[in-house]
Image 1 (tube, rainbow, N blue to C red):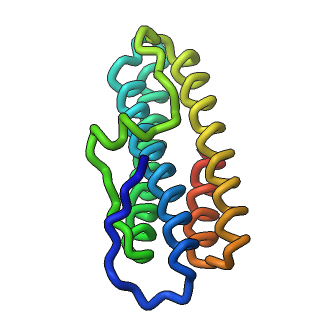
Image 2 (image 1 turned 135 degrees about the vertical axis):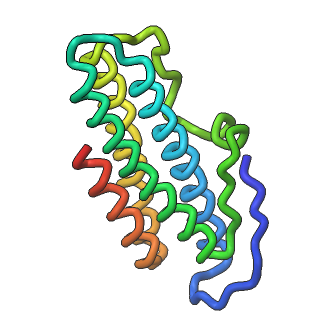
Length: 153
């Protein structure tokens, strides 16, 4: 699965806890990158009378996901990990599932995006619990912010 290229850090987390946290942060990073791409997929393929308003919605959601991506990547780096964000890495490690490419109508896109966001939100909240168990308040804070952004979408 994940190979961790790590560099020296002076954080007061046990090395095994840091490695575990980096593992789930990388999984959420892959999901967030995939989710941002799905927002663009919805934006590009929307074909109905309500396209303009929905495109604005998908674009705003994409912007929020970009902020989440940056936060997750910075936290991985802070914990001495290497944020991997290539298309290949994302494709191999994302758990968002396959997006229905044949979707054209706005409500179909909204439903598909809503389902993916809900799965992502559940995974982020589970990771918050894991980070709290090992006492990593910084990661809890980052993930809580991601969770709030996802919940408002």
